[in-house]
Image (cartoon, rainbow, N blue to C red; front, side):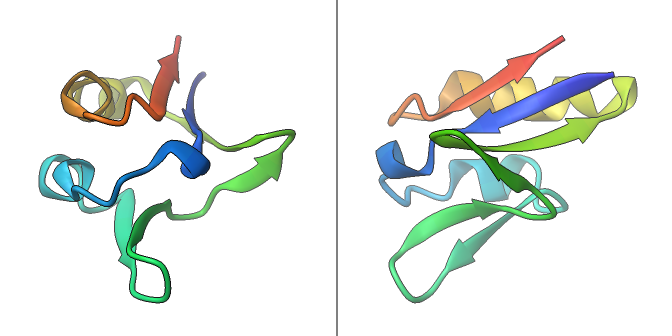
Length: 74
């Protein structure tokens, strides 16, 4: 199983991740940063396990993220 790691402190709130994979990402109106829905805190990041068919969309979000705060580990 693959995993998304979101280093939320680096998020600039551009919302590209929401455009690419809205079923995983949402905007937090309180601080203007994006949240990885269903994730849990582990150390200094948020993590979420994903299935094989969900990797490609989230890898695209990672690649386009200007804050470089999304990592997909396979």
